[in-house]
Image (cartoon, rainbow, N blue to C red):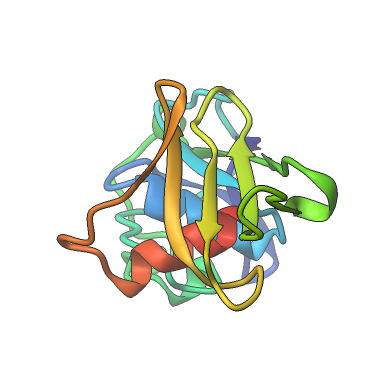
Length: 164
């Protein structure tokens, strides 16, 4: 976790927090090779940077591989001071069970478990042909339940895959 800084034209600089959200943080975490849950921070949460503000109005969808691929203002075009420096945290996920999956002896169903640190509920895949597919279930209030598919998209599936 920390303040986001980018290198452009031979110089390091900060990113303004205008439009900064978790989708932007997700791209930064991915670019850094860090999985898990991405969270955006604003208002120089990790302290004010120095030097130029290099990016502003970053509007990633969350699917980009690097911040350079996201819609944004032109380099060095901004209306920010360092009090608006953007930050991210990339919280790793903790796998539950041996090797990240368990076989249920009672029903012989393959189960893939995952739980994010910080109290997020565990999720699992059930009844797939292998540990990489199946019905998504979530553990809430002491029991496993399914997730309704209304509005479910490939983007939601990608989040589950990254979490597992």
